[in-house]
Image 1 (cartoon, helix red, strand yellow):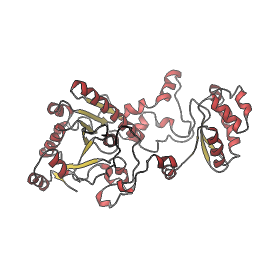
Image 2: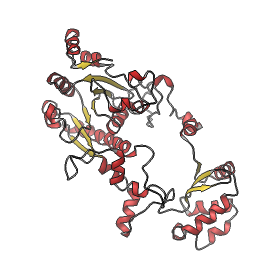
Image 3: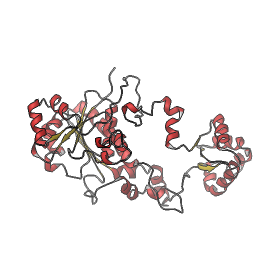
Length: 398
């Protein structure tokens, strides 16, 4: 059996997170990923440490490790004509290009879509920027934190009486990487029937605004601007964190049947027939009363007791794990989410296929680790020419 994207070559000109996250996932699916990096420093995140994987001189920070498995690292200086020529030759032999330079940033090197499509019409070319290729903000840089702020995401994240908060990981970058994979796969599918690739214009801002989901719809339907509710849900009650006698627990009661079961389990069956609480709409309308009633009961029980009784009843709940506890959870271990140290201390991708073979992931590469092998095997460049390119610092090796 083969993996879904075998025989697909991806030229990765991206760095930091959104682009590398996309190409890492494509690599997990079996694509060959050729990551082109600056010879002097490589991907920005190589230096975003500590902590480090192995020797800090190898420039493999924990952050870099999270988004760059299953890739070959080729260090090429695209600012010199010979370097740009090498990258063009790689693009000619690739199916996909992923880049996240500023709008128009690659045109000066002849590495923009128009230039590369002229030599490889089958190329699927994905550009990831903060705001897209057009519009009043197109020229502005875009980082996850500022996008979370501009998109409205921070305005609904955090406690009502505290400052707005970002999500604990660069979630807009991650979501943009996922959207990039979806778009690339769709374009490859279309290419199978048309024989022609296409250009994908993907913006972090667009992804973040579209991901507002029900919160954006709440505003568009009601005209009321959503605010911060902490861990509470704007449309469902109870759906938040509650204190226990010795800690905290999450309740996520999604329908009236679950609520009736919950009320019975905690000794308050009358809530299920109380007009203030019987339906979700009523509970939302009487949120403060409902939440206080539940809080007063749960404060009497330990977290372990709550987890036990809710678990037996099949009610949606969870203790609040730290990351160590999450990675040590029996489910995470069973699903193989925690990768062994031999492949670089990272979390496995979530995709599994019945008709594909699973392979041992490749550890994120040292900078320039595969410069020689890729130029030799993909571009058929001889050893003397490679040595000359190294001496003139057009390329670098680890």
